Length: 215
Length: 370
Image (spheres, each protein chain N blue to C red):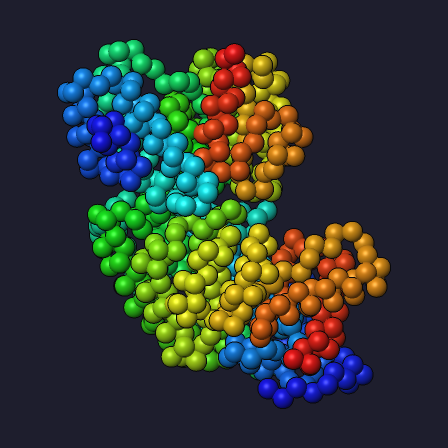
């Protein structure tokens, strides 16, 4: 098995104690850092996401794989920086105003990070102004991801999108929404660009929207 | 249980009252009592013991929920149902382990604000977690003020909030709790904590028996899934939760209580774990496959089955037809043992409320022939 494949299977299996060593070994063998990242770790997280979507694995397995990837990235980061390898894009993420739930939002953040994005996580109970402030601070960010778990906080998805529009920033980003009570129909109704029903699909959606935004 | 033919004239006649806690459904604190062949309690307990009931019990009439404020968790979780005045009761605050819960009026429930867990490292839980002193709560006062509300006609359910996984989440936050179930460096600590929790729950359930002997069912609150799937696999559940849930079930059973597992989420995949642990009843949320559950598990545990969403206004015949279909759908089980649970979201539709009125006569007619 090639070292890159070894890294991929270690990430997928969540072996955080060995991933760092394998990345070091791969670097010593002269494997390009971007290859280690893309073919070793991001592709492994893609498989993890697919298995999660199909209920072959569950939240703990996904968390443990993400933790393993993080260990590998820690070793890899200085080498990526030296070569000027950047994340594929930025995503601003948060649970909307009035809603304290962070489970879904965190899983989405983890999978989007696993897909190669830099995630700017604003946390929970995030007012529209905070999203707008983050967008102004990160003008290169192309995606805003909004989460709501409660039917009572779904209107905050609408008002956040409206506030982004009123700030004149709507055309600069793609907005994706999700959360237990949210549906594709609701996402369409409030003018979001995308909706996904689970964390793995959110990572795929982010890639698709990013492509559209940068086309 | 002796099954008599359905006699509508006799059985729909009001012959008295059941005392209950005042609520929007019973503002004066009484519910009508009808001339039924057995009491709602006898019907329900027979079902929990393994028989098909004489009629399908309705969760809001045929069961008496009891969540006294003497238990700090009931106040913290915003779920107090008892005989003391509700005015001035501040919901939310510290639970029995000193974890802070924030009550959300709109939702009617509480959550722990994430980001500052009480126990930052499960491997050191003994350093951060102090077990409650059961003797420090005024059980005697709670027994004195609440006992008069229980007349033995309806089964009484006492809720224990934050079971095992929920308790772990309240200590660690969700992600750390989920990870700890699978991480071999943390699993021993989780086993140690759950073991100690089971000792505590055993004592706690003993106190419930001592002070509230009228209780029949312990509702153990432990959510295991999201709207799309369980949080963890059946294998993880069997390894990390079943041995301890079984101990809770044993604690209930040795005290003469049945165990109702309150377990939100699309959890069909892990029902075998509930059965193995000795759970007597589960009310699945609507996203679960009821037909599959009834066919495969209704001989092993009582299932709560949601009535259909009757949002549009149906005429009398339409409602009766919907009720008939509902009752017939439960008969796919070889030995149906079903509780009708209409969530508050459903009960806002007048046609659903009407359907619940028809549930007794229609299910009684069908079930008298089983």
